[in-house]
Length: 311
Ligand code: UT7
Image (tube, rainbow, N blue to C red; front, side, top):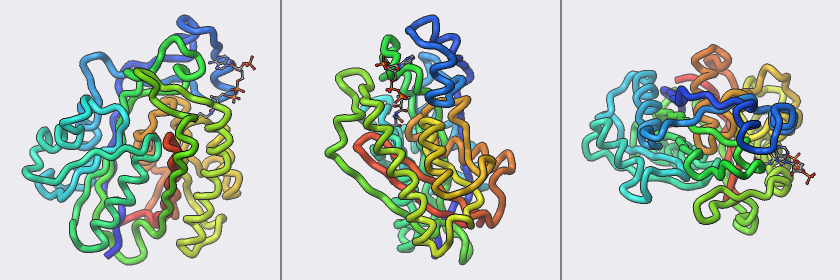
């Protein structure tokens, strides 16, 4: 039994905050933000829209795309570091709102790598035959833990949600290989300090430009393929310069990499599923493509999968 992606969905709040808007609240410039990060704008959720509301919208879209109803789910996994409340969890709120009666639900916390941890967890349940359909959501309302007076961090982040239904797919398709890892000694470089995100950007950058390329190559090789076989790469959308390091290591052309960081900024656990859902819908990812998803984040954590796209 192979586990794969049988549906994807996403949701981004309507409110757009541009770099020019941020120039008005901190000492920064559109030029600095674009050249250092690739970010042009980000979405910010209104006060009355919390994490579970965005998760719900993305989940409904993913279920529709998978052509299944909520009662066909066996497990709901929500990756987030910005839940509405520590408990009840966002996954339980979602379970109730979707009407997924008695379906198991838990939140999973691995910062920006959370969606990768969720997908790889789902894969185990499916491939052991324990479950058939697992909903994995990556969602963040980072704006509520962003210090809007700290230019080192406030220009980087955004809100949003992405979701996928993971289920059985035909032989040769689905998640072919994976890698997960953590290094808690680097936890001090990216953390929530009291109310807000605190980050040593240079240290996180150094870690990311080493880890993302390495994990990308590892999953491709574990799946029995060569770097040049990769059709599409979705790296965690944190910073275009970090993403470029992974793309160049794989040796693939620019149009084979997702770049939604430009319009959404870094949405942490939501960034990979948001980009994935968009790029499936706009035709950049096609049946039979060899797709690599790779993330890194606070913890420090990382995770990657190689997928033969399709059911
Ligand atoms: O999901 C994971 C989350 N975190 C990340 O992915 C972060 C990884 N790190 C990065 O993306 C980069 O390190 C940053 C984008 C955060 C910073 O880029 P950098 O090229 O590493 O810049 P830097 O830290 O070397 O800072 C250069 C200068 C500093 O000024 P001084 O000390 O050289 O005078 C900063 O104070 O840029 C200054 N600076 C800013 N200037 C204008 C920092 N933030 C800003 C800003 N606008 N928003």
